[in-house]
Length: 77
Image: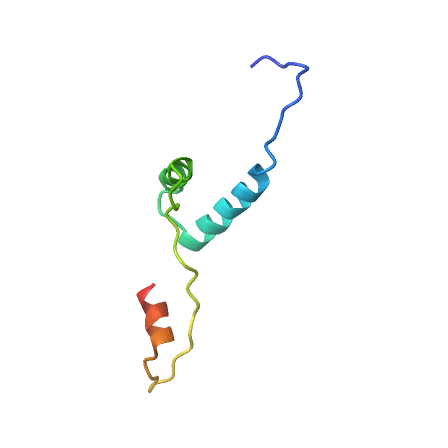
């Protein structure tokens, strides 16, 4: 690759985009990161929501825990 004296221009939105991508990858933890990344950026390029999921919170359960709507939402995700 030939080196030029022309400075590289980084779009101002790139750092935020990469940060959101990294956070989503950590949440999802896909088996095939490369394919997931391709799907993620393809969705962004089409203006669609990328393949991400809500962050699930771990809940400590006792032996007789009651099922609440919040707990069911967490279990479902």
